[in-house]
Length: 374
Image 1 (spheres, helix red, strand yellow):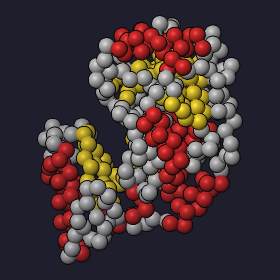
Image 2 (cartoon, helix red, strand yellow):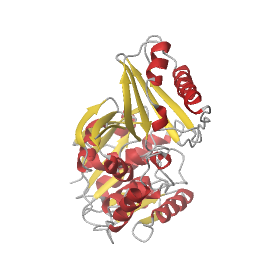
Image 3 (cartoon, one colour):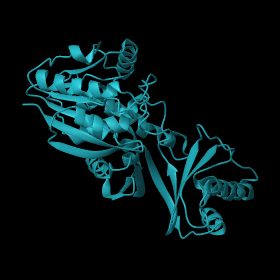
Image 4 (cartoon, one colour):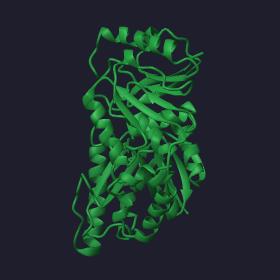
């Protein structure tokens, strides 16, 4: 069994523990911005294909005490890199964390690269080239007080980039965060889902993928492990086929999204087509003032602008008040979830929240607020 680590956004550690356990991971333990777990190669491929919350799945190679540049160099050279990297494969090194003496990640990464290619020169008389964008093997080095952890990054590009969304609006929500918010809300696919401020459609699309049991990794061009020396292509193809055959035919309840901006609605429709769900999900151009609940009950979900990224706007207060009025007057019998990164604006909604869950949108502390609309 290998030791793995799934990295997630700050605060989502308990959620990812649950998700990894559901996917069959062993000995799952929450850590700093992620969770450690154990499993075989099949599990590694399955987690990359199915997990909705993590950014990257790292496979641990080695851990050693490390304070100085010399410690780092020696520790990296103690690994037999020929098992993972031949000179014809390209590499990249990502460094995170620091010790007192090694407090510059760029230097750390350089030191690691030098230790690896110097070993290659001795063994092969040749060395790997560095390729920062799409390397064959991406190495992750994490420093903390106790030392250095060396891993291979099995994901390649961050898993939140599902690949279905070339088109994004002005302040897009990461797909992995959208999936986490849906998870936190307790929404069930039997309930209607409506986002009246849907932008390029990330929340409704993630709800749709969950409801139809579609693996988020199916839209990606590739995973990092596909260029590893031990890649099992047949196993991956088998898991992809298995994922495709476990998709559901139709949504148990409607999923809708609307937005006032015709351009972002076009993007949302294009993104739905890329997911193969454009016949399942409904997107339309609509002003907030015209929004009406389509059924007696359901979950209304939105991520309104909080003035952080989209410019400070004095009209936002009025906009939040209008949002509150629309929910109060037209969504009786529904439950609403609003992600807000601005306390004053949230107060302008004028409704009393029944629950507030702290979450981070990037580095911005936010709250997911729940409203029971009687």
